[in-house]
Length: 134
Image (cartoon, rainbow, N blue to C red; front, side, top):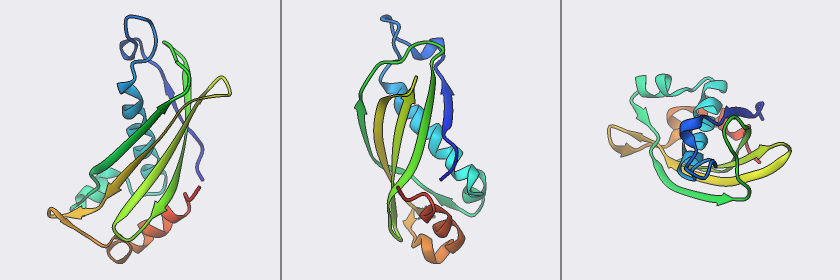
């Protein structure tokens, strides 16, 4: 498991009440997922150069506490489920040692618009993802 991804809340991410708008947590999830992929050596650039994309199939969010401008949110990413066709990723966000958000996203793998068996097409990538099991 890699080091947590750190996101500092920006002013434009806050609503009129001064708290982080709920939609931004999905963006932070995406940032943390991309960071995880970069850390294991399979960033978007590499995958897309190979013709593989990983669209979002599902997103689930649970908001626990608010965050505000300039808060640093630490995001721990883990793989809950990994199959040849799909992956489910969990996200736990903390701020000041308190859980502020939990969520998950499910992704598939496509090449030329068709599903691919990721462990056969990219066995090293599949093995690297397996290291992120919760």
